[in-house]
Length: 303
Image (cartoon, rainbow, N blue to C red; front, side, top):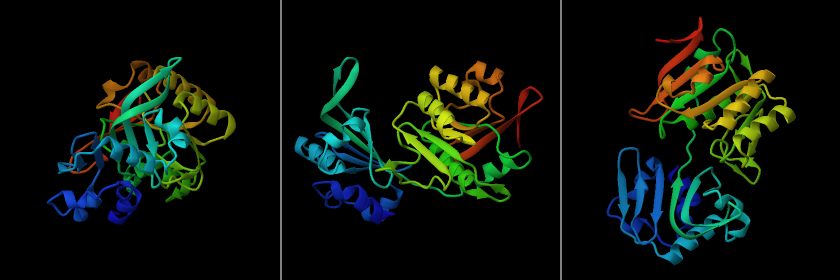
């Protein structure tokens, strides 16, 4: 993993971060979650419970060079992604971008004077979903499932592994055709048409499209058994979820929240989800706090 981070991220820097820090960074690279680069400020390597300062003040020329290297020297070819405030690197790593936005007809046409880059390190945690899936499919096969968690608790990691297992099949359950609507390319991390993360053998991915539109497109064109997407929240997105339910497609979704009370009341009342999985962050992301099952017109908490 350390070699992968060095090759896929740090090798694009026009300077070495290793010589700028008194700690043995090479020994800690496998634990890095983010690399935050800010113009004229020190770089921070972010871990689960601490940040490590790299005493290098990034210049404007270096900031531009790093972005150009991430784009393989062609910012123009990556402009559509950059205009959305992020881009995906080979390996599934994701770069958040801040700067001065140039608007035209209420649309961002460019982000210039780049002031910050945040590289989020992609990690797959295979089989982290097996206990949850085994519980969910035990009696009636897969049923509509919503994963709730605050930011940084591992819902995307859990979602990705659930998609992989459902797509490939596991235990007594055969593989399912899954349509993944990956609006910001965080789940599959598509790079030149190839998922950089393992989302299974029977998974079709559409990315860089609004979730509400992607859900409708997948229903009409791909004939999925299951539609999966990350971070549902907008009214249009919930309306697309309703269309999917009415079409008979199963759903595997995530949303921000800490409890059942964070789910829109009308979604609870319409009984869209048979299972709700709530995550919490303790010693590691992706830990399940509670699992609820819809039973006798209310949600029952499993022990």
